[in-house]
Amino acid sequence: MKVRYTARDNTGRSVKGTVESSTLKAAAGMVREQGLVPLSLTEVKTSSGFMTSMKGVGAADLMSFTRQLSTMITAGLPLTDALNLLKVQSAPALSAVIASVVTDVQAGVALSTAMDKHPKVFSKVYVALVKAGEAAGVMEKILNRLAETSEKSREFKGKVVGAMIYPIIIMLGMIGVMILMVVVVIPKMKDLYADFGSELPIATKILLAISDNFIKFWWLILLLVVGLVFSVRSFLATEKGRLFWGRNMFKIPVMGSLLVQTLLTEFTRTTALLLAAGVSVVEALRIVADTSGNLMVERDVKRIANQVEKGFPVSISFSESEFFPPVFGQMIAVGEETGKLDEVLEKLSHYFETESEQKVKGLTTAIEPIILMVMAVGVGFLMYAIIMPIYQITDEI
Image (tube, rainbow, N blue to C red; front, side):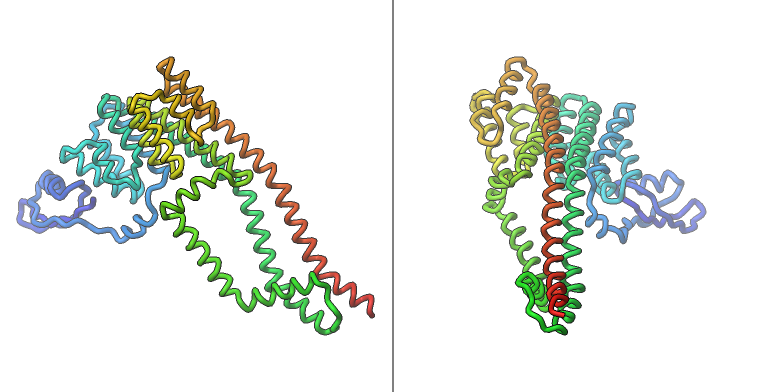
């Protein structure tokens, strides 16, 4: 944090300034090192604090922090010095969190415990890995592997999101064109048709009715859309809604199988990382269950964790699951027999990631002709509804 001080030098003159420090006590020590006698110390509250909290800490910032912290610890830099350096170099939102962590660490709190106080920045998986690194004395290796895994996960999610950008842009463009036609073009054509007074085709009447209602009741349509979005979000925030979404999200045509592969990729990658760090199977499963983002999968994985805790083999527990495919239990059985469960899960993660990438390619290939067909039907309907009355009027003349 930034501390503003008022002090007196050896001539008795009053001196004012600011220093960067984790606590007021440390700031007083820094002022004394300058040959000054501190009179008052005040923490400076930055005006950007609200915007900082709104922005939050991005995944890229956290990944960079993790990699740099690993490098500094490997180089032999004390933990508090490394954190203080990263506090200065990091973005404002992350810097504030690091400052709080530094304060706790200097007070004798373990790094994992200090990070656990900021769940919005450091996930349960992150904290568990840091705790395992502290216990085994291999913090730098754990942090380095965590950074590499986070980077892989980020790249994978980027591929999935990137593949969906094109269809979304096309759909938004279609909606924009439709609204422009309904609001601007159709009303002008309506005046033209009225001047001739001829009978209009059914398609044209439907289009004119849509245009009239949209122009008159656009505010009601907007309210209905906002209300629907708010209602759906409120429902999905409840346990019943989360369970409903957890059960049915994988049944969505085309997208469902991709969501399954994506979740399996993240599950196996994270579990492998935890096991490789020395976290027990039961604890690793419970941690991953809480971070799965799907209530159905969360309950299933916790059921598996409870069975394993009671002495059931991991492979059999997974084989009884409705969500995890048969290959999952078979591969885990190999990992149990060889004692290399983390390596098997890492290979499974690579397998599911490859499958996901193939499904993404297949999805984009399938969506493009569907979008073109929808556009063709929409444009055809508009052309027919607009041009047919003109042909009829021409024939009558």
